[in-house]
Amino acid sequence: MIWLSVVAFIVAALAAGYIVRWMRSHASVYGNGMPQRFHLGDIPRLGGGALLLGIGCSWGLGVLQSLQWGDPGSLRLGAWVGGWLVVLLPSALGGIAEDMTQRLSVRYRLILTGASGVLAVVLLDLTLPRMGLLWLDAVLAAAPWLGIAVVVLAVAGLPHAFNIIDGYNGLAGMVALIVCLALAHVALQVGDRALAALLVSTAAATGGFLVWNYPRGMLFAGDGGAYVWGVVIAVASISLVQRNADVSPWFPMLLLIYPVWETIFSIYRKSVRGVSPGVADALHFHQLIYRRIVRGVFHDDESRRVLMRNNRTSPYLWGFTLLTVVPAVLFWNNTPLLMAFCGLFVISYVMAYMAIVRFKVPNWLRH
View 1 (cartoon, rainbow, N blue to C red):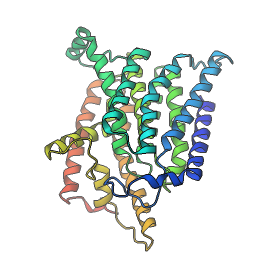
View 2 (cartoon, rainbow, N blue to C red):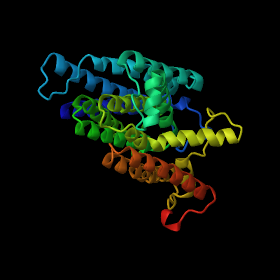
View 3 (cartoon, rainbow, N blue to C red):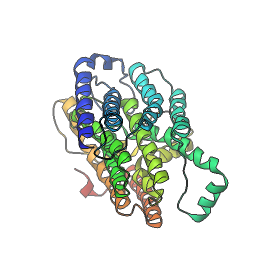
View 4 (cartoon, rainbow, N blue to C red):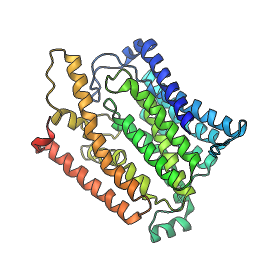
């Protein structure tokens, strides 16, 4: 598992370095007037390509180790891993195509992530077997198609949730890395080494990308990177619950409650204003923190000032994420507690959002 992670990290870091060195001129095609833009200069948004290459090489070598070179570590990475890559490709390639052309509409990107969800059901036989509540479990048993529908919705939706929080250096990447390691930890607790190996490799590839993304912001993940994280984490979360009866289905929900709720709340506030959910704006939680909480950057060089203020935003959200990850890892098999923490997060998020909007942020949070 360790050497697969090393391969993923090195390949992703080298590929990202190549993009930064040789493809920076391509970034000039990105518009300067987008509301979610919080940087100066032309920065490549092709980090998803580096992630996909690192993950693909690592997983492929893991399969070779299991099938041809023996499997001393008992990872059991068989041909089924190829199914994961097939599931990942429509979303990842679609996101990378959008990053390169800026011409793939939200509708087509939704179709591609939905295709990944359908492939997950067909190729990996994924379904949601239970919800942790007796009456919901009875409904799922009576109507198995509901479990399949949840899988398609999760795989199709989580990539876009990661895309929403991908606004600042190190934000989405660090959230993805933390979530992957948390899922891998619980997978090891229940003896699912194969799933843990895939997740640790994904975290390592993310680390290779972060070398160039944080703190200097020389490369962005783009839609491709967000879609890679979203699909891998969604498939891994459902697989972990499906393959291991001890794991509560609310464990991955609490792990991912930040990007999931950010998406739900964003759809709600846009619909209230009569705006299409597909229209980008600058009112997401991380954007409000950037504009109304992060302070204390005073430099004559405007680009340096923007970069430093950008970098100071992400740690606020890392801490916010850890508030859900820590209880999720501690109580991964306790459904009532996990549900309670999910509810607590939703309440805390709404209260924090309203406080920032109304300029009622405590002074100790301002730096």
